Length: 389
Image 1: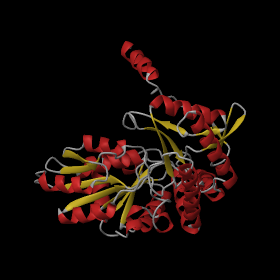
Image 2: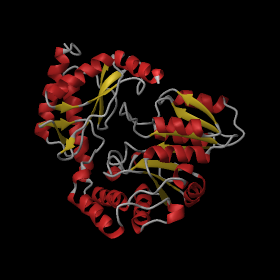
Image 3: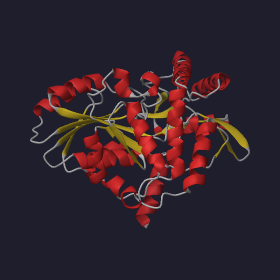
Image 4: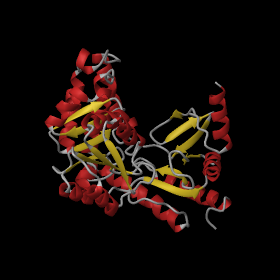
């Protein structure tokens, strides 16, 4: 008991304490708290489809028809019809033979890696991969070696020097969630083919963002048929909850029988699955949402960088404003909130010490006037905190 209290005291003293904050969503990019309205720049709802009328109607129709809960795991209780529709459409969208829905993206990563990797196998993992990938590696029976972030020369060296009597698996995020940069998947695939390795990419932050109509990293690099495992989520651009794996029929059948996070979890509710399916249909019907998302992100990035802020990353809607110390990130987030903006202060252990940042995310449905006002506020607060002169 004392240990728990001591831990909380310690993280508070180091500006690392976290607690959920209650907001009432008003739409995809505005929330209300204690009677005040805020602009939300801390959402992964990249296309704003959580408040699409078509998506909401699909969820409500499914609830009316199938009820609120699934009643059990899919292998014991069965799957309601929305599951089959969603998995078929995900496979088509991702250009694979089949797909399998998990309860979360976290469970998709943990379940897949721990299922496909055996004692004789070696995993090659980018050092900035998401925690769910890291935990999947830890739960697997294989050896994990970590390569420096996006450094292909280091990955090549490790592939060459690391003994492996089984199979090699190279796993990477497609878009890295805290930095917003894109994995060099084209180069990873070339190395994988040279060393007969399997490639697994987590496209959680790439679907709806990269590729034709937001199809993700594989499509962005034109690598269809050369990446064996594609992981994704329904909880970001696809406006629901859940994760999925897309790949060959053999892979999906294997995971159904081997992935513990699938086998032993109660299935998602019909309304949730229907919402994900409807959001996928909306994305395909309105691919201009992806173009608008890029336009909004480009505007924010260009304006803030021109003002002197350091924003790492590439062309994605994740804009990390680098401030260094945790206390500065917390203070900046608090000042922005006082002026009507909700932005996430990202600190260790999520990122390395000394790399704390404001993680600003942009949505396709952010209004241009709101973005103009937001940039003005961010620049003013940054000057007040001497982050820029």
